[in-house]
Length: 171
Image (cartoon, rainbow, N blue to C red; front, top):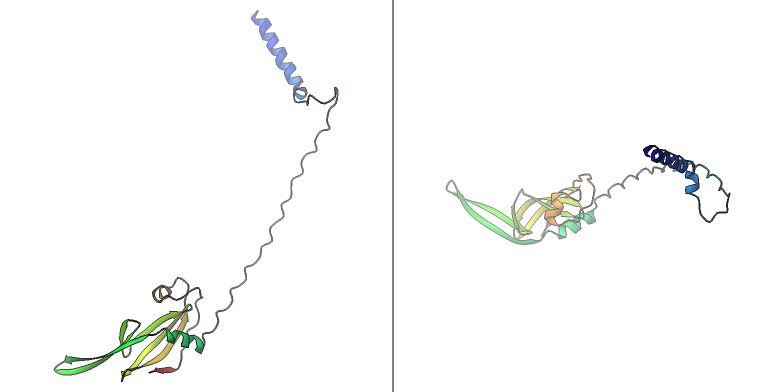
């Protein structure tokens, strides 16, 4: 009996394998109809992307007298001070000017950032409620430069060229 069962299992398996194509046949096709074999798929050609070269950034615009004037307007002189200090038994007079809530004396540098440009002036004479400022340099700074964060400059400019400027007296 075991042999008969085993033989029946082998015959059933062989028949199923032989009729595998018939088992996947659409039941609504006419008897004896066989569809045409599908054509092998052609590989789809993917076009190579055209590499565009990035355009070079535009050169930084030159720093003009107008830029210096705009930056100069950002310097707010709010006061002057004259201090007497004894040094070796003699009174030494020291003049100070308060610009943008910071005090400066002759020879100090004042820095401010405007439109991504760091402007630098040197404090000259301080007398009779007037201060003499000499334009020293203007340098383009990057957008994340600390000078932009401190002074509230707009940033975004590229590093540029230092341009010395003539003296300017402010009264």
